Amino acid sequence: MKDLIAPMAEELNRALGIDKDTLENELKQLIQDFKVPAGEAKRSLLKKYRKKEDSGGDENSRDLKPLQYDAGAPQADEGLFKQLKDIRNGDTGITVIVNVIDPQYREITTQNDKTAVIEGMLEDATARVHFTSWVDIPDIFSIRSIVIRNAYVKSFQGMPNVNISESSVLEEYQGDIPGYVTRKCDLSELVDSDGAYNIEVEGDMISIRPGSGIIERCPVCSRVMQKGQCRAHGKLNGVRDLRIKAVIDDGTGSMICVLDRDLTQKLIGKGIDEFSADDPDTLNELIRSKLIGYPFVVKGNVTSGDFGKILVAASISMPAEETGKLARALMGELQ
Image (tube, rainbow, N blue to C red; front, side, top):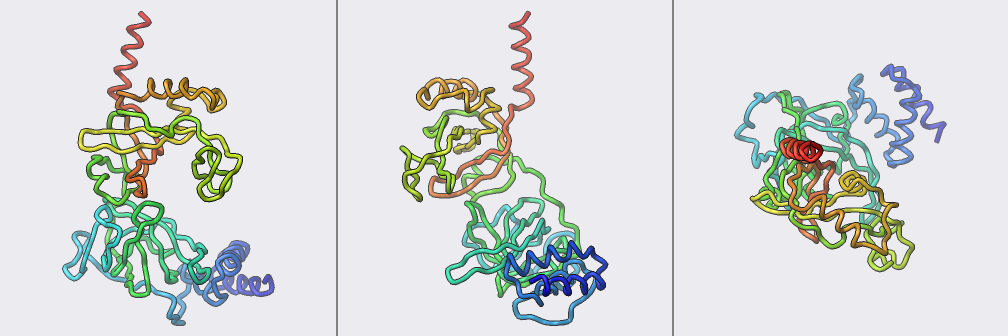
């Protein structure tokens, strides 16, 4: 394999001026890890670095053609244009105008074989979503903004995923697409969605759900175990973990909110090793005293699955005005 990669890296180094070790590592990843044919891997790197145009066509590869749009509303011929916040699982034939974030090759296992796909994130001013391209698009690594026509949407890890297929049409977008910033949402909007990345909600914690406190996870798949049993891998010695499952309500709707070990420990001010699984009441009471009846700002992702919509928290804090009230109350107690 080195006899194949080294000469290719040398040739690319002369053509592109890119460090040879870098090129060898990228070629190795494409050819060995992702099973991309050697010629296609070479062409992908040429396209990626935008130093040399490749004139060879390939039915499994797509080039992005420059397309000039006004930096405003999409044109009338855009078909079923959608902002990312409005896409839903099952959508077909849609058009999106988006920025491409961190595209990467990844090898996945399908029903028939292993195949290399391109994955990453797409964003517009309204949302950020995951995408999968089932065709090779070398240009996507070096172009920031694109128009994707005739894409379809299918759930990925409980959230909408834009899929690019053989029938999709991609073109470079010359206008300016504002980047996504964390958006504050009403829970009613999120309840009606199919999931969302990187959103913010503010509401009161109104109850603690079963499954909070000390739990055990499967050492193989990390699923929560019940009575020493994993539903996928059977009876195993579980790994201790700590979490909170609470219900947050903002007046427009409510949703289960899950806090992982780090957020839970930060919130209650104690670590997992300070509690015994034989005394769950002490921990549950502490959790209730820290959450119930208090307002919180939660940032994270909303997933959709067998248990409905769940807000998976990435951060949690009290609103600034509530923090001020607590500080003033504490100062009053100290005086």
